[in-house]
Length: 375
Ligand SMILES: Cc1cc2nc3c(=O)[nH]c(=O)nc-3n(C[C@H](O)[C@H](O)[C@H](O)COP(=O)(O)OP(=O)(O)OC[C@H]3O[C@@H](n4cnc5c(N)ncnc54)[C@H](O)[C@@H]3O)c2cc1C
Image (cartoon, rainbow, N blue to C red; front, side, top):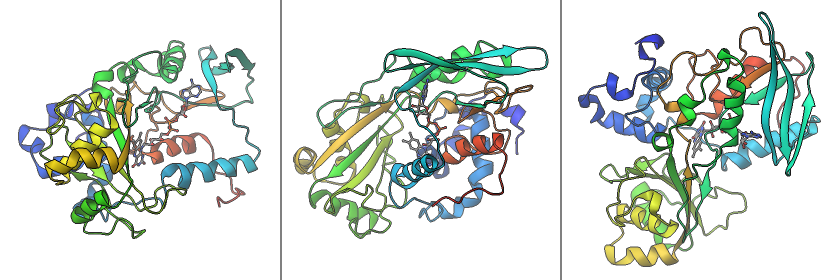
């Protein structure tokens, strides 16, 4: 019920007491949405307002909806193909480095885009009739994949998505404050991993906990399962299988993630950030109830694991003030808009969702009655 203004710049643990932060409710909430106590109280308020009506469906996850396959194959590829059919040109591998703006008392106009494509600088001049829709910042910037024998690296080097927003923001006070979000890697990093099982031994343990056959082609865990006493605060989930269209029928893909990536594990005694894929699988199997004598062998032979370190994944949960995110359409903007999780849509919607980013695009592009339906 608190106002947005009263929550600005505050952390969750400044607003909620220790009594709340030890509840089962907070355990559900933080592990499902990746909230940490140091994150934004304002965003926590918006999440409570947005999702509290689903609370009855949380214990068994009937509240959650899933695409048939992973989101890339179920959402991104169909949209991409549809857009190609509409005549859209995609230029992959091009890094946009800057957007120039001409700013006067009553007009803000994007005048040029600069980029580097395959090492070659390029650009385009813009007029009032062009539209520049720019995603600013990115939760997956500089993500690094490890493998079964290599930990994922924490990349703290140059970050083009953030640098682009920094250059844009330097041109006008209404273009936001990227460093509120993108300059706090220790607070915004998070690691996740996919474990692919290679034979029937690990799926038998999944079935024991989920009480469902993971090979049935139907819902398996239905949402995340959390080892509430794990030092990493480790959660895992098995979506409907196969999760990838080309996935062999006898394999199961499991998503594993932890909220505390710097704390030593209970089995491997290392932090998740230091672990190879094999070691992450060991820690997970420990919490799956696999007998100690079998853990090392199963992690080495019965699965393969890819860890992913994402330095900025919860950047949007950093405590923020009203003007830290620019409006989707800043005042007096003539031919541009900002999209994505770091643009303020002015709605009650919450950040860490595909839906929010889609909504920022909808806020700029007016509805057209004769739109071709999506397949
Ligand atoms: C592990 C994980 C789990 C998630 N789970 C869920 C979930 O269950 N439900 C849900 O709704 N959402 C979930 N999300 C969030 C969802 O994926 C994001 O909110 C959404 O993808 C954001 O879309 P976007 O287009 O705004 O930004 P992004 O997906 O970040 O896209 C930005 C794009 O811009 C590109 N780019 C950046 N800088 C430049 C540059 N300078 N030049 C050229 N290109 C550039 C990037 O490479 C990227 O392709 C999850 C995200 C992660 C990482």
